[in-house]
Image (cartoon, rainbow, N blue to C red; front, side):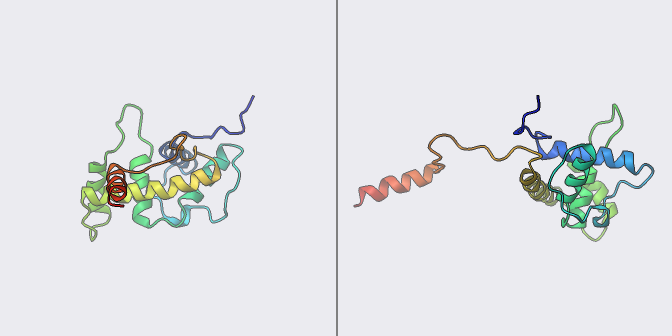
Length: 158
């Protein structure tokens, strides 16, 4: 029995790994670098099979800058059996060669990666391919310690 509330992937990272593995199968022999023209332009609203998943994930990356697409393909692109996944430091070295004018730093690539994952993750959630945000519990009160201190002292001065 298939559950209607079950998502296809647990995290955006898994969806990206799936996308780049399928891309490698469909485009064998092509360079790994992903460019905006490779992404589907038509919106995807429902994924019924692996090909639809591939199209929907590609659509979720639409609009990202070329450097973001390159970084995602570097980090989530397929690796051979027994070969460790590329690290951010290895991607940084590769990026300096690929984009010589950018002079990438590790912290800058980390921020680009985080930002790209947020964009893709939000779009994947919207399509129902990854789970939505978790609620913060029954009360839903997400005040920080400093907010609670301010509230306490605010009441004391009344």
